[in-house]
Length: 244
Image (tube, rainbow, N blue to C red):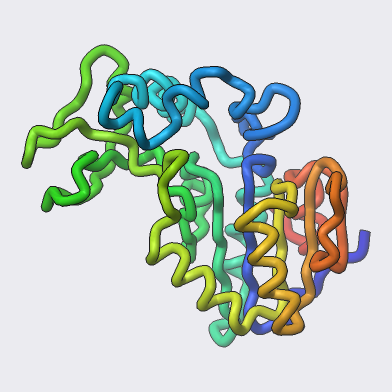
């Protein structure tokens, strides 16, 4: 595997998916053992549940919050944080993650877009409420938590099925992709949105596009010029020549 000389690039964008966190003991979204295979995900993971069964959202995600409290960043997370620190002031770096586990932040990454939100915060389920999202590690499995301002149920600060991705997150992502010259997608299939649209944008502006994943794409995306197969926690430190 040939190393990537990041000094040759000015604007680097990295997109990560659930595959990067498997070595931290977290389940992937799809495939064998994937979270989306659970019946409760389909039942409680949709935004409509907030109105009819708000406790169901915590039934699904409260246990995940407990698991995340003991999960630790792996070598892949640490490598991306080290990569960001190694860049020169004139270089730009944006890490866009589809994950809600907060492991990139714990690893030390700074310039991050949480595309799907984060389990490390809770917020009011009423969009018209004036309260702000806040750091919250409690699983809320026993009692439904209520907003201190308006009394509506609280919810994890994540994007549920049926919801749009946050405007600010999409704005920052698309802005970075206008000038990107190195685009990496790690631990994601690369064939579904947003990965598929992001790589098309990167290819359009002439960026080098690389997919790093455990398994090959079932339906290859021609916008990816390179595909590196293997475990992200093994590949990334070697790919960038980093000691983590």
